[in-house]
Length: 280
Image (cartoon, rainbow, N blue to C red; front, side, top):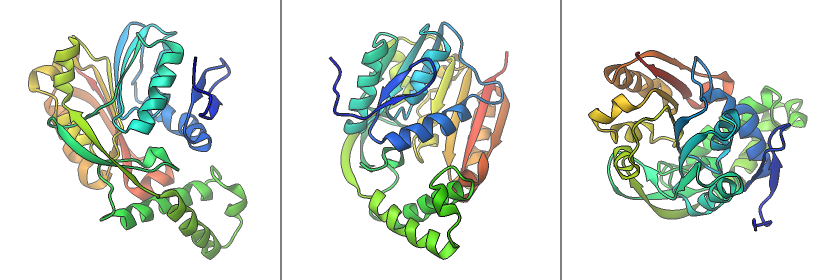
């Protein structure tokens, strides 16, 4: 029996339903962010093995599962306990044997990290935001929301207000949204999981870990890179880090690499996407 205390969201015309923590956020992520992972030739097909690193509540995992009509193995990683509970619930609703969930994060070494959890907007949660840099994070959040408002994707009634009013409202909204709870969570390396689960190939490695993308990649041993066919990452601090990520992927044999920033919201917050497909 599934818990009914979480909001329920119908994701598509096929009746795919997901439990979520924030219905507005989940709707936005499924409609606007999930399609961004499947660009520049990145696909999933029947029989594939997919790693979903930074799975949140499992929207990407469910999308891959639906695209393959259930004939896919997804290994989904989410370290923050309140988010993981919903991820596991969504996996159990469909197929826990195909949608395998892990209550850990992935990084460059095995250790415990302190994660900041934003209960009112879970997708902001990160090991790389804490009270010392919260004001900077709030500024980035505000710029992202402002770009979405100006594009008509959020709060359309606010789009017509003067800029000073929009900024005043956003300051209050962001402050309310950015309440933090902290959790100490275990992280391990991707190669450790490959050995433990006896993975012989990864057809798609998706990484969205709010600032820790390079740490995840550095946790892959050289001999394991040959098992990975496709990589897609959302990269924070894109202007600073994207060239290093591209160079690492090229070194590991990926020849079809594309990096880009999608829309005003990503440009405003210095976030971008990197897609890579292995040679051969």
